[in-house]
Image (cartoon, rainbow, N blue to C red; front, side, top):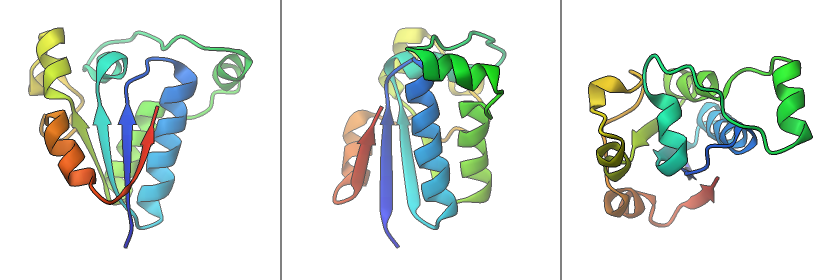
Length: 128
């Protein structure tokens, strides 16, 4: 079995959506899939927050218009239906002053970049 690792730092809709699509397809295809949420991506995974990710261009606007399944839904389904684990960045959590219980329930234990990179060693890594 192969391993796919996804690092998500962008807060734009298109990049969040693509990261979620790579994650969900890899996970349901039987790949062990690890996701690291940090920087501008992490605020979208705080429970109860209803902020919308800004679009970069026409594709983002079209995705909203056509009601493409939201990136958070795809990440959650990847965890539930596949081999995905989604980890919040512990440093970003400190900066945002959020605790584990403040985050979506399907996220794993907070982890640091050093640990994530160690776990990702030898795998395919995607960055968004």
